[in-house]
Length: 245
Image (cartoon, rainbow, N blue to C red):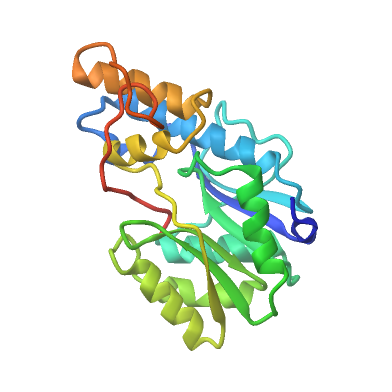
């Protein structure tokens, strides 16, 4: 893994278990949606813990419940809209210092330590006036890397949950004088089709792959059949995604 990642930190925007699951149902029941969201969060945090970085910070909204936050510094999220919370999370994580920081959510369980380290390396080995941005297929984004909290000050003015959010975020950062480099595109678990897509990119032994396969079978009203190559049982291919911003 890139050594440069050791000079940076990972920041995870997380919600208490059970929150933020409305988009998963229907067809999922509340319990099924919660199980998928919790599996995705757990797998994401496992990857974060296994990534060699100087510090791992979780900006948490609500009570952690059974969420495993070991190895992470936990700070509470502020109130306000998504852009405001994102900017505040960067400020809290950096705590007055300029520290290369990569922000992700808990809805990309397909991330790996190697991928996160490579994303951090791309940020750390660039100039101070560079940001990195990972777009999602729906036009939003799943990851953003900055060198200083001041740069996140543009985020409250960027409309979120739109098909042009990533484009607008890039433009706002460039207008602030930054060069924006691309990270790999990933699908975030949001709707049930998103969960199917994300689970198909996970290793079969992960919680997300297993839970989504079980739920897919339940939703279909029968046991999952043989999957297509590269897909966990019970999944179908769908071009949909929801992302962090």
